[in-house]
Length: 79
Image (cartoon, rainbow, N blue to C red; front, side, top):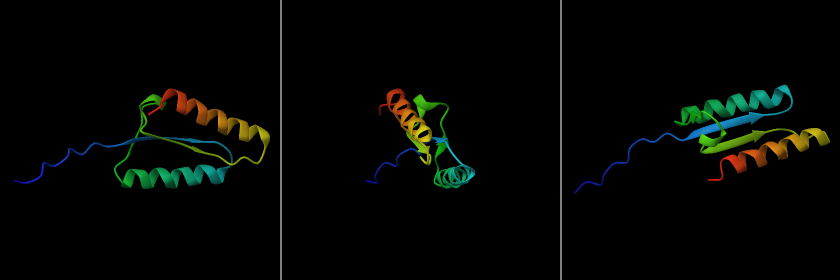
C-alpha cells in the first residue's frame, strides 16, 4: 500500500511593520520568502497561522507600540 498523500494546505501569514524604512524593506523580503515557500497572506489577524511584528524599539513609544501589537495578535489569534 502506498501512503496517502496529504492535501496541499497553505499556511497564512500576517506581517505588521512598525518603524523605519529599513523595517519595511525587511518585511517585504520576508513576505517574498514566505510566498516562495507556499504561504499566503491572511485575510485578517484572526485568520493568520503566523503573525509577525517587525519593529525596532529605539524609542519608548515604538517599544510600547510593538508590545501592544504583539499582545493584540495573541488575543485575536491564540492558536
